[in-house]
Image (cartoon, rainbow, N blue to C red):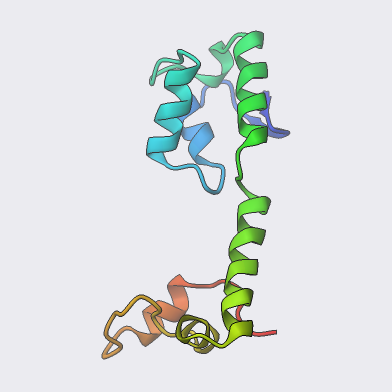
Length: 119
């Protein structure tokens, strides 16, 4: 087991998949981070050197990911609701926010946007 930011990963897992398991890191960001530390896309977590792991942990700790990013998004939505803007009202009602039609999408919008809206 290898630990990245305190999360255990199997030695056989690809580094790309391990990075993408963090909330806020997608394919492009993981590719950029791996390129920065000269990690091959097919490299496994178990074959990382200690120095690479330390550098990777240091880089990820400076990024806004996981709980910090979730908290920031929740605070942004709360701010929109507090000032009473259109987007805030749509978030509060659980409706599509970015101009989509609501003919058949109300349920899918409520399902896809499961961020805490009502307090």
